[in-house]
Image (cartoon, rainbow, N blue to C red):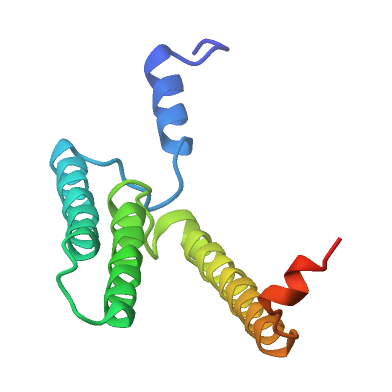
Amino acid sequence: MSAHPTHESAHDTHHAHSHGAGAGHGSFKGYMTGFVLSIILTAIPFWLVMGEVLDSKLFTAVLVMGLAVVQIVVHMVYFLHMNTRSEGGWTLMALIFTLIIVGIAIAGSLWVMHHLNTNMMPMTHEMMKNMP
């Protein structure tokens, strides 16, 4: 037996250690499915907003944000290949932690902006003329 591994065994070792356990490669069909879903999930909100399809702007905004969340999930599954088995579950834990931090940042920002808007003294047109 030689001191150097053969090309085949070196290739097998590299292949076995190159990806996390359970992480799969995407297929052409998987990428195309993700691509088509992404296009649809982009076109629907564009149509809702530009066509002024719904009377309620609030409901339109909520629907657009919901479709954005669905599109994020599509990207994670079809393009990033995230699932509960990849990297021993650590990618899912990192995702959950990231979502919690982003949620806290968004909620805190909205809370601060709302209270600043509510508690600031309203300025009249006359007051604005006298400002330096």
